[in-house]
Amino acid sequence: LCRNYEEVYNTVGWPDPSQCAELSIEFGFNEDSEVLDMGCGTGLVAQYLKDKSGLGSIKVVGIDASEGMIKKATEKNIYSDIHRRMLCNPDEFKRQEDLLNRFDFVTASGLLAEGHATPDVFDEMLAALKVGGYAIFTSRVEYLEPLKYQEGMDVRANEGKWELVKKVTYEKYSNAKDLPIGRFKPVMSEVFVFRKL
Image (cartoon, rainbow, N blue to C red; front, side, top):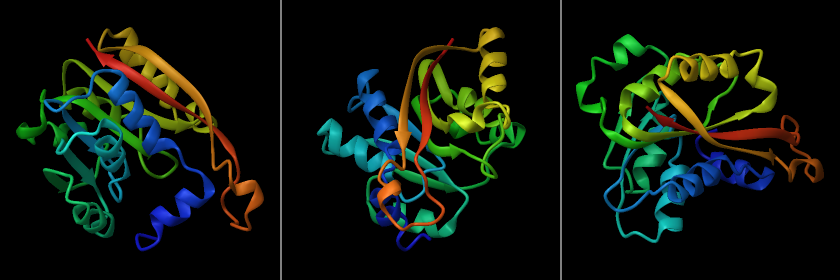
């Protein structure tokens, strides 16, 4: 999958990385901003951030569990650093002090999915962000309740840890209805922007 990952997802219509990049720019991303790209995959969020911002260089740190994905992301020469690690273990994450209270933005494009992440990842986002920083992430609508993502967002909002400042609903895999690619079908997704309090 790593080999033709971008080609497949671009063919079926996967706007998640672009959504994360565009909203980062809307909420003030600039040459001084530091971004943590969780579940960075092949580096599409960083690529879109660089291209859409028009900046020569950007400060993005990536995290992914897949060695193959990290290799592809590294080839883009955009990331200042990439960590190979599993997410959804906040206690372990908080031991990595160089990532704590550091970032202006945390992005997660496609990370909130079945078999990928639990709501514990929200605690890692909060740990990585500066106060006033933004967590920008996507999820299929159909995952929000059964995987407890919505509950996880709401609990942290009710605890005064973050506040929702924007949510956009969109269709992903919109090209799939016209293509003979088996596992993809158009689905509704949402991108969330939370500000750390």
